Image (cartoon, rainbow, N blue to C red):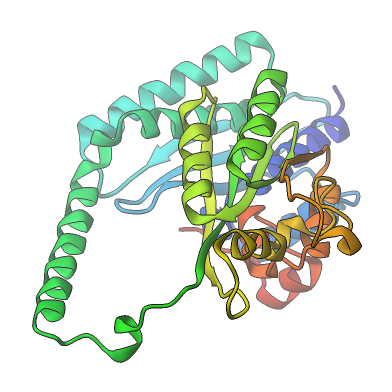
Length: 340
């Protein structure tokens, strides 16, 4: 493999990682000038005009306590196929927990190399993510503190309500229909059985679905709050290499005055942004007569998914965060991200 081919392979993997994590979960490392050049190469996807210098960046695995996977692609020299270096850093994590995670990283890195995987960093990163998800006790101290704080706030709020110290807005009872829209990121979506299950559940639960298959996968669902909650529960119950809820938006739909319950529910479903352009949505002229039967649409590329979300008028900041997108304009305005 030539140096140019090796560099292109490295950039492709960095792009895959950037599409799989949030803006605050990826940072460039090294000198600012080098970081800016690498960021432009990744976003613009053009030929990299450089001397094969090292690529360094960090991927956040956990926020409290901080846990990062640091990745270094060494400088390329001629046709030499230099390997990647990865290590974990977590100043506030207990030593035993960190050593356990280091062992997981080393095991998956070795297996990925032995199997000849193209994306060693991506597979190692998602493996550690999945292990953390299955072993929350490794970072339980921080979570316990957050839980205690939330419980304390709930107790204070309960006391206020019992004392009548609730503002008028909280006391008003509305007839609005509670709605929700969620976007999942997953390591990949390939299995036909998963797609069949999700399509069936969308129809059963009256939830609009839009999924992007391949590597990585994205799952978008919208409908009434309880129905979307059940969809989320079922999705998480399936076997995944790695999966995360990236955004969870809640809002209320107020039906026209005097609407019957059934009509209000139909109107709420038709107001969903993901219903726009959906193949399962009845023609607008038939909306009043046709029975609304939500379903699932599938696309195969990030570009197609973006076009659908833009057409549906999903807020930019919502899907840009979920898909870890950063436009050229944002890149040049914000400048490169720096080391954690």
